[in-house]
Image (cartoon, rainbow, N blue to C red; front, top):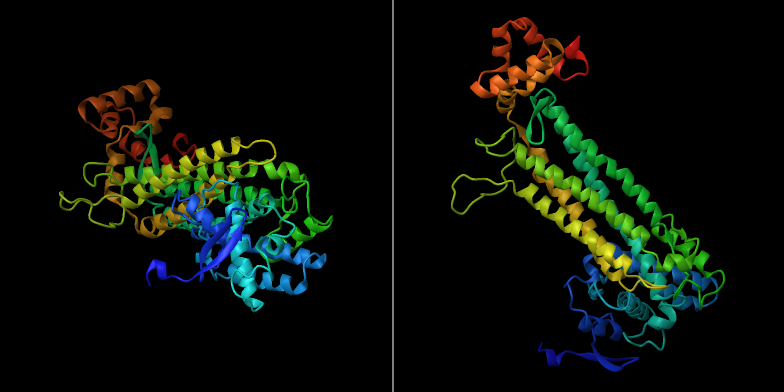
Length: 472
């Protein structure tokens, strides 16, 4: 069908009449927003958790309005049923407005209002656009403003979107811990400032990776509790204009029941309407997590470098040929991808910071940028954790011979002998070993500072890897 043969319907708003595709579930205000904001190419539908949260907010409002006698029961039930279908995934593709938009989220709110209204109209036996029977603003948006419905949906949607990330981190942590057990007997050199330090096991190294990531699971829970305080019922600026005195408490109570999340009304709705503090904290946590993941990726790349002219202490699973010109080359592509995700999340945090700072008086008009970046960061981090675990960590092998060789040839093991031969002797031995290529063991034994039996005991894994054992 040619574009000019497409069936259309006429809808009206403040600016006049417009033709809307007859089969579209959205309406005229959504159409204008699509035309006005072709910014990122990322529509609301890209984040289904946010779409579901929007529908939950609208269902909670409809329940409260019905209970308070502010909307006819038949209309309310149609709206609630429409919202339930959207939560279940129907019409997700009709949420077409770009995440970044002017208007502090009004276009997103109206996209939801229009889709829900038209789906509710269908349930009442009316065609799309027959808003005389059920209206996007008068009915679906009853007792609401974008300024309370939108941020409430954001708070709720972020809680849903965080669940896949928490699961991915937990799974990655478990895989790292399993590698820690697998490599528990692999002696290697620890390094500081990229220089040989003292021996450790490869298992200890991977155990540390696991513990480092696991800390953030608790931190996410703490931040999500802040997102349970919502400003639903505050309407335009937090004063609750155009609402029933009991509406805010009732709507939030319904929202908690619908969502399964312990949402509560914010203590001060005016403050909650303008403040972006919880979002800033959440973004900062995601940045911290990105930094940890990037450091892990860096370490994996270093430990696997070579494979013969680098450290080569671990072998990453080969995922794809690494060069169009160098035969046999395999690159650490999964850790490299994780690094890039981390850099993007770090950049997203700066954008969130600037947008939060840009709030003025009773509203922050830059909230759509905050929303875009938070949901993007959550999605990218969850994916990065998943592919790092599935396509890298699980398949890592230890190069046991290389690890052992590094320890035997290292000058760093002389540190374990300091309590027995003194710092001055140890320094001299280290310098001589570095100068002529001899081993620490050979030099100490040649000078008679310790016997070979004493050296074997002091430089055994049991002695070097447990506190105080080397001075017993």
